[in-house]
Image 1 (cartoon, rainbow, N blue to C red):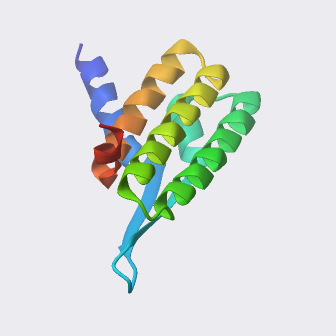
Image 2: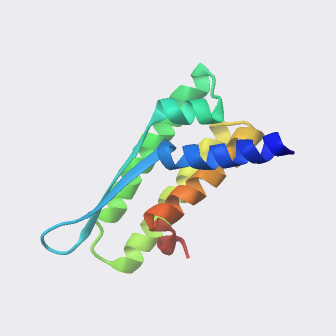
Length: 124
């Protein structure tokens, strides 16, 4: 039991370093996001094989591109819809690439990261 709880705590700590996102204000007062994923850390965290690594890397690039499009949206309601669509698209791609255990881990990492970066407000 002790090992399981330690593993859970370590995975949560690692999740903070698995994803990176910078939220910075521009001169005009709008917010722009830059979402990058450290694929090697994510690979270690999810214990990916080489075929999965390639699929996950492509899914993360897709996710970053969609979030950038959402960030460039001028309307708040459209931005919310685009973020939601990006997250759901990313989850669909990850579901195809990962096994059940890896997918559950990924969902917890993604939820924690979205919450830490303040993007979860767009998912309501």
